[in-house]
Length: 105
Image 1 (cartoon, rainbow, N blue to C red):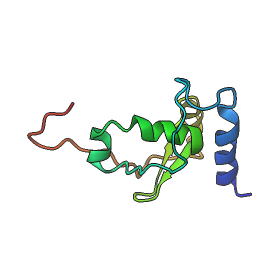
Image 2 (image 1 turned 30 degrees about the vertical axis):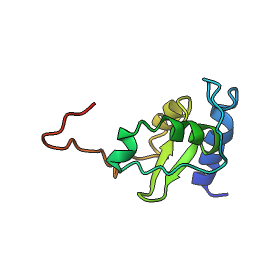
Image 3 (image 1 turned 180 degrees about the horizontal axis):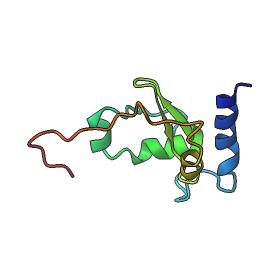
């Protein structure tokens, strides 16, 4: 097993094992994965709570195939990732820029 796969397996199965599913009790109504496109402004404007809830329950280390960006979807996993900069990097991260003249919500 390569080191990255081992880390992702640990995150997926270990860091947040005391909780099952979403803490709100929401259960996915479909087995179909949502379309997550983190670089698409429309994805964020539609309030993607359902997509992230599905990912937390079914795919906590989600890879946005369109952009190649990995998404850590469980809050309990984020501090662990942040403390292990030797394994994770956001050097090539992309942030959505504001659109000139547009009111952001």
